[in-house]
Every structure is written in C-alpha cells, then in structure tokens.
Amino acid sequence: MKKLAMSMLLVASVSANAAPVLIGSFQVESGPHWTTNPTVYSATEAAAAIFGGSASDYYVSTSNLFVTHTAHYDGWGDHSDRIFNENFKLDFGAPGYNDPDPYQDPLGYLDGNGFSKYAYSAWVSDGISATNYVWSAAPVPEPETYAMMLAGLGMLGFMARRRKLKASV
Image (cartoon, rainbow, N blue to C red; front, side):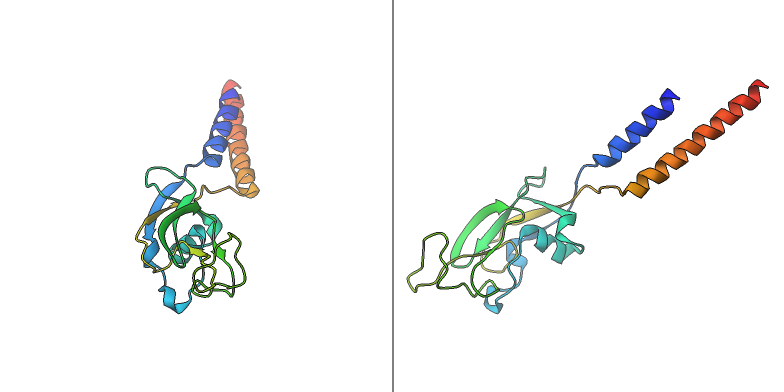
C-alpha cells in the first residue's frame, strides 16, 4: 500500500512540475511593417499570433537556454533594442504602433514635433532584429485528470488485493 501511495505522489508531483519546452523563436523584425500601423503586441501575444493558442500558453525569453520571462522590444521612434517583461506592451494614443498620442507623455519626453515616442511592441518590422525564444508554459492538469488517475490507481490496488486474497485461500 505504501508503494501505491508513493507512486501516486510521484506521478502527481512530476505532472504538476512539468518543465517548459523550447518550441521556437521569432525575430522582432519579422512582425508587420510599422508603416501599416500594426497592433502593438506583448511578447506572449506575439507568440500566440505566430504559434497559435493564447498568450497564456507561452513563456518568452531572451535566452534559448532557460526562461527569463523577458523579451526584446522595438519602440516607435526609438531604434534601440529594449528588454522588458514578456507581458509588457505600450500603446499610448489611438490603437496601433504608428499612431502615438501627442498629448500623452507618461515618461516626460516629447520628440521635436511634439509627439510622444511611446509605442513598444515585441513583434513589429521597424529595424530591430533581436530574437525572442518561445517556450510552452507547463500544462496544469485539470481536476478531472487527477480524479481519473486516482480512480485507475484505486482499481489497480483493488485488483492486486483481490488477487492476493485469492492466492492465500
């Protein structure tokens, strides 16, 4: 009985702590061209747009060796590679990368024309060729999965006990 309980605990702990798996990468520059006023994407949203699913299905990293939960970003009017959290995105003004609001300046800086330079996206063709690595988020089993596993292990235990009783008679 101890072996059965230990095996159930082992299976539960292994499935609950499944490690993320590297599934691919994307270049910031591979996104829609900035002149088309594309949607501003966080890195996880870009991963979902590229690989399918939803943003919560992915982790993004600047490393292909481990998950950092950070990503490379490009900013409108800012041609520097910036690294932010994987869920970061900034889009002040009307929606879209190429349409910042001249009246909103949260960081206290306007360019020479009076426009805020604040729209940052992880997936936009605007000159930054850095690579973001995409990892699958560890799956979280549904409660029904554990219930089915426990029911199956219970049946195995019941059958083993029944055989043991039959053999002793």
